[in-house]
Length: 233
Image 1 (cartoon, rainbow, N blue to C red):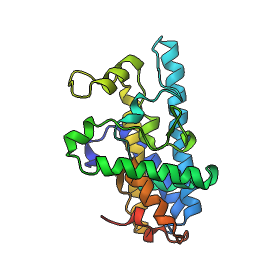
Image 2: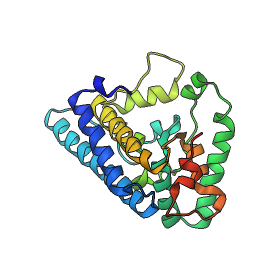
Image 3: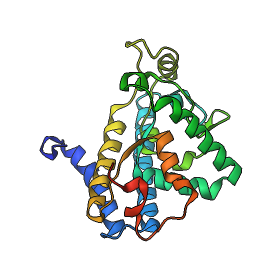
């Protein structure tokens, strides 16, 4: 990424993510501080989205996204290492062992299908997210940035995109600003982790969940640079 080509708004969101990661890690990749920083990043983007929703309502612009609407939850979902680390911790704290195993099994089954696809096939694939339960996200408070910033002004456009992925004229009517803001915050966060030796890799949801689980083995929470999520691939 060429920072010289970024707008001032882009730079501001990038700096927000960068400061959060730097303040949390201070060159020491400890788990508790990283969880807190990830939560702060999510709270910041939620505050932005809430403000956008208020302004949209004032201008009679509808935002149809809500918990329980799951059209976009069937397309490939991507996140980065610190998000999956936080997400899995949320799952451990809020789901029973059986529920955790169900999530992992669905992730494994999906990855067996998606992991073999070409990029074009992957982009068009439709499989329910491993976290979907009864049409809603079972880890909604800890969902990755990509899920939070995917804001549609038309549920019908999302349904068409879900039902007919081969039609290149079908695409959800998304708000551009939150997409860019979230992307910049995550890129800044990624930059802020570099002094710790941690690599903020991008993963498919299915792959990220499986790696975050770490085969159930304990991890050194004071040195996350040794966790498979954060190793260079």
